[in-house]
Image (cartoon, rainbow, N blue to C red; front, side, top):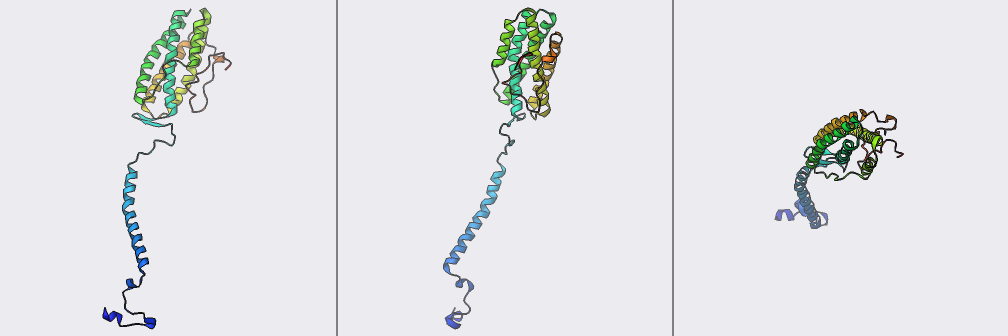
Length: 242
């Protein structure tokens, strides 16, 4: 150390002092703190990145899509489940009325098909709802209850014609929706339900048309576009001003 101190330049500055000794103490403290921060950041970043990798990504940007054991379930898929359930709740009673009040063999046959088809379909939709953890209606909609009241009040040939046209109009609307959902759904449970419902609805359309009472010029047109109409607004009966 003595050799380092003996040489001084102009102004008394010593030559040969170690470089670190020339750095002010406050600056050295700042450098140490910065180094510590960078080191800590380098250690934390991989941990944070690893933790983020284990987070479950959302199924879709659409908040109405939920994941189920059989695939993504959309709002349109859920609407189909409700529609199928609602159909059974009012069409089975309508079929029973056709057996009791129908005046032609064809109307009675159509009524029996409604009972048989929707009894099986209702079991399937309840099983599907349980798989998808979805609640379903327990009574017909207000409009469907109105149709049942119309059928209860009608007698004779008036009942036959009203029965054939209300039911055929409703089935035509649902048939169009079934095709849309079956083609687009990513959920296996919905695909199976839509396939079964498609067969049932087509059979019902055929037997209702076999009554030769359906007024095709007054049937509601199928829905346009890819989105299914709301289950809370079933089609109006043929001849309605809605």
